[in-house]
Length: 148
Image (cartoon, rainbow, N blue to C red; front, side, top):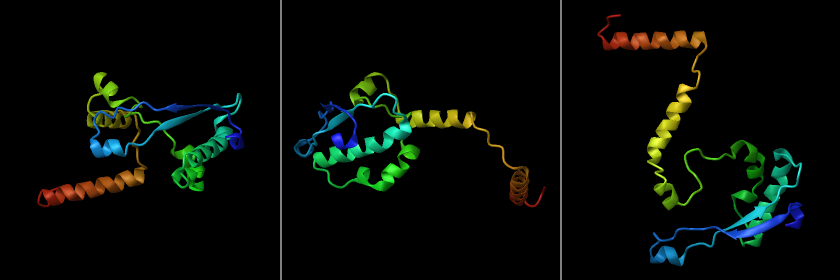
């Protein structure tokens, strides 16, 4: 971890609810641990991403994962553009989510789409809108048996 220049705060065992696992699943259940890394004071997101990526690669190697997507240069190159936090899923245990009336994920996705669409301006360039209107009018005319 010293190679990354970031302080290792702790390794933590991630709590899991394995009560739904069958015999085969329980036999192959992975040990999931989380590495907690400190961010040096004053280090912004742009400067923090490369050493954080290096720390992840070092942690994976130390854990016996020698090859994986996180170690690829393309992961680091697209990290800032593709890293996001889901607004549909939380990082809670399923039982906690259900007891808090997490609801139906399909309904949550539909609600989010409605919110996005209602707040988005869908104005097209006037030339494109005229062309689309003409296509739509021709289609309506064809469906109505040639009546405009």
